[in-house]
Amino acid sequence: MFEMDIYRVISEQVKSSVKRLLFFDYDGTLMPLARFPSLSAPNEEVIRLLSDLTSDEKNNIVIISGRDSATLGKWLGAMKLILVAEHGALIKYPGKKWKALIEKGEEWKKDIISVMNTYSGKCEGSFMEEKIFSIAWHYRNASYEVGNYFSRELLSALSKITAGTSLQVLDGNKIIEVRFNSINKGGIAKMIVQEVQPDFILALGDDRTDEDMFKALKSKSVTIKIGTGKTAAGYSLSSQEEVTKLLKNLFHKFPD
Ligand SMILES: [Mg+2]
Image 1 (cartoon, rainbow, N blue to C red):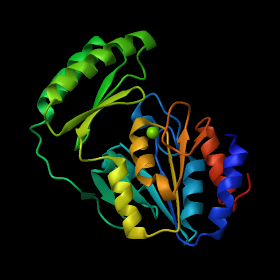
Image 2 (cartoon, protein in one colour):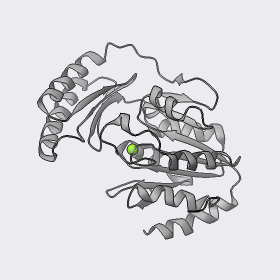
Image 3 (tube, helix red, strand yellow):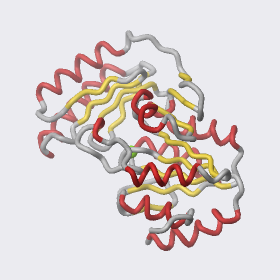
Image 4 (cartoon, rainbow, N blue to C red):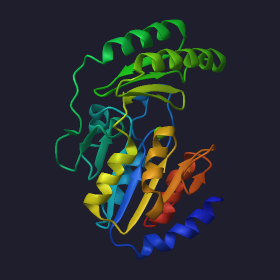
């Protein structure tokens, strides 16, 4: 579906609503994917968009990400946003501190880290990222063939290690991630909907983890996947650049 069609369908709902809940994934949705996670600090356009959106009392905005809480807090913690880190393991309300929604020790990490480090050594350009409740292996900087080859091997090694545990291996977009299977964007999104009780819900995301959110919200929400591929979302946008355009038009307070 073309962007203008999405706009037409949604704009009436936006106008007539008084309590909106907007879920935005961060990487690949609000901001383009960068070579390293640390390089994706929000640019001026995104900061301006978010501050304009939050200045409208009708909007409740959630940044829902797989990123760690420290980084999200550093970049966006001062704004009037609800922040969700590590796919729903931690949440931060505006002006409040981070709250962890699960309690786990560090023991589970050892074997995962050891295997991921082995593959970081084998696969040039790949690297590991340790968070509090999840560990990710990124291969976006590896060559396509090498990255693809080793990521399939690592996926199978991790699946064996985590079999029968409460851990889950996620095969994402240039990322393999291990996290607790009780934690996903769908569960936390539902919880926030319960709290806010909105009359309009919009959710945007680009990756596999966002599908949990799309499925959980589906019935009464406008869900939009960024990029091509199979999705549970109601609509798709062709690229990340379309996101800010759509949001500016939809909440049209701003000149383009
Ligand atoms: Mg993403």
